[in-house]
Image (cartoon, rainbow, N blue to C red; front, side):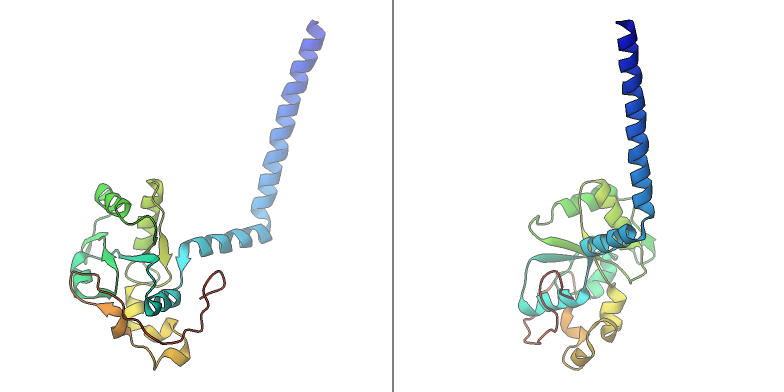
Length: 201
């Protein structure tokens, strides 16, 4: 009886160790497999990033399934912002971050409509504010998307991200609001080359 119990215990221990080693080996192999890394990269990019061109198209059509959030200081938002965007400042003023205001920021995002895709933007494409706030929110169970450009590109580099044939048909000023209110995008009959859905811009 003792021998069979010892044999059973040893078998269980060896089986557990073998299974763990095999699982770790599979995970290690998968993490170094280039095709898996590439697939993970594109899955993350598509889950998080939103094309500014698709947002401009939604504005033109009057779509209301998204909400832009401007993370710049309230002072900068009031001067000019992307039309329709609300302000949840991650900056106290243009030179002072307010990243420490976690409760205020998280609370403001939790109060936003749940049925809309919430999309943040900050100063520019390389600006880390949107990413830092996105990380902060995710740590508190709030998930947002990230506009592929920032305010500077939207306002000052319109031709950087719009299709060339649209440069003369659209103007940045038509998609910008001033003052403390979000403003409303104007409907436009500009035909976008982008399609809706998974393969849209």
